[in-house]
Structure formats: structure tokens, C-alpha cells
Length: 355
Image 1: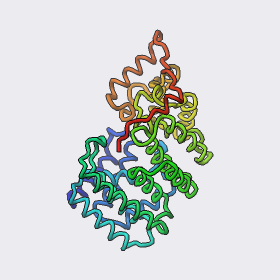
Image 2 (image 1 turned 135 degrees about the horizontal axis):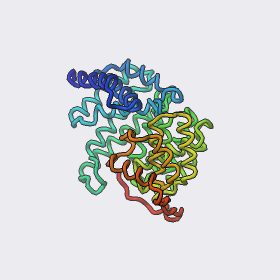
Image 3 (image 1 turned 45 degrees about the vertical axis):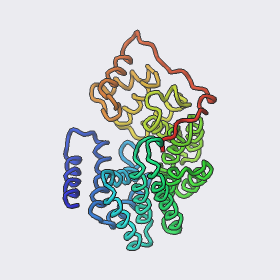
Image 4 (image 1 turned 90 degrees about the vertical axis):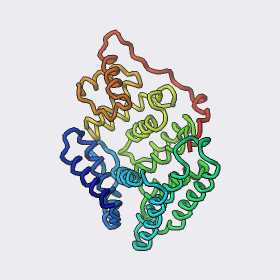
């Protein structure tokens, strides 16, 4: 454990002083590394302090507008991602003790449920449902149910934080809860704290085709979320959620395989960049303009970006993708290539379930 802490501290120093990383990437890594160090060392007080700080959702965001609370939990997840069965069971016992040590704090209950879900996913494995051994399903289901029941039993204390709603959404998705129950929990979380972007993101995951939805369900939820979000978010929430759907499901076929509206997406990306004018966000805008086939927008943005893009945005095959988009946008003979619009009826086709 001491070796892990030393490695993580070194990572923080690299992020702080390294020159090869973008400002946005450094901000993100600093938040994740601080969470990892506290978790690996068992510093519950520091974890509670960080969690409380990041609960100011509208203020605690990176320069690009990313939620630091989301990055905090990403850091915890990265800490346990390589754990084997014995380490995960030790983590379950440790987090259970934390709930006894800090009974009036929401975070320990959430961390214990997270540890139970981590073990469930470890047993299940990361492949498609048909790759999971039949014997694994019973253990997986047992631990998902344990996490769900524990969260419900701790609602009185833990639901003071919308982290409780987020992790219950996660548990319900793994348990295969019906859509109405998921949307009801989403609405309860938004009523508690509409600025918690994770509520929108985790609910979106449920409606992706690889889970329980399809293109129509994704579009319906994103439109619903755009109305539910604080007014100052506007169409930024539309752009952020469809950007997430591109990363998690549709990839570069999003503008032909989903029901995203490019004009609405463009307005959301414009607002997103106006509120958070960073090179990171400009690259996101340029990337989407390219895969959406909007040559005029892509050309203007890529001219501003020049030869030093945020490579993380253009992955996979970042150099090839960026070069291809740049050449297309600057070629006077190249035509705009807006993809064919997918109809709502096509969007209702059920996707494969990756659970």
C-alpha cells in the first residue's frame, strides 16, 4: 500500500510540473490523483473533505467545465481497477468499517456500495453477456442486490448527497431495473441538486443501446434532461450528453446512427465554448464539426487550432483523424459531407445488451 501511495504522489508531481500535458488534462489528473492517494492510504477524513468540496457542482469544475466530483470518483475507480478478488473483499470490509466510523456522513455508505459493485463487476468480467460463465451470474446478482439494498437502507443519511442517487442509478442499471424506476430516481436526484451532471450522465448510460435502450430512447432522455437542467446550462447539456453518447456508444457514426440534431448540437457546443473558452473545448467542437460533416465550422475551428491539437480529443488514431479532418476542411474542392439523417422509426431498433 505504501508503494502505491508513493507512485500516486509521484503522479501528482508529474501532473503539476510536467510540460507535455495540456492544462485541462493536468487539472483532471490532479483531482483524480488526490482522490487516489487518500483512498489508497485509507484517509477517510480527506476523502470526506474532497467529496464535500466537490459537492458545489456549479463551481467545482475544471477550466473546460468538467465536473470535479465525477473526476473524484474516477480517481477512486482507477485505484481499485487492478484489484483481484482478495483485495476487493478487503476493500468491502474496510468501507463497511468506514460506515461505522462516520455514521452521519453520506460518503462512506456510497463507498461501501461502490465496493460491492466493483466485486460484482469483477466476477462478471467485461465481455458481452454470452461470455459470462453461468456460475458467475449468481454471485454478480447477489452483490448487485447487496449494493442496491444497502443504499436503500442508508437513504436517510446517504441521500443528503446526490452521490447516493448516482450510485443507486448505477446499481439499478446493473440490476436491470425498469425505465420508469430509473427515471423516477433521476427526477428525485435533479430535485435535490440539478447541477450534478452525473445524474444526467449515469441515466443516459441506462438508455444507451448497449444497455437497455436505443437511439430513440437516447434522444428522448437527452431532450428531457435539457429541460430538467438549470436554465444556465441551456443547450450545453444537450451537447455534453450527446458528446458522452458519442464516446460511450456511437463513435464516429453518431451523426448517422443516432437522432442527434446537428444544428442543436452546434448551438450547444457554441454555448459550451462561450462559457468555458478553452483549447480543449474548441477541439471538441472541431471534432464534432468534422464527423458531422460541417465543413465551414470545421475549417474555422481547425484554423484556430493550428498544428497543436488536444490529441486526447481526437482518439483513437488521433494523428490520422486530425490530419484527415484538417485536409478535408482546407480542401476547396471537398464537399461538405453531412451524413444521412436517421429516422425516429429506425432509432427504435433494439441495441445489443452489454451488461
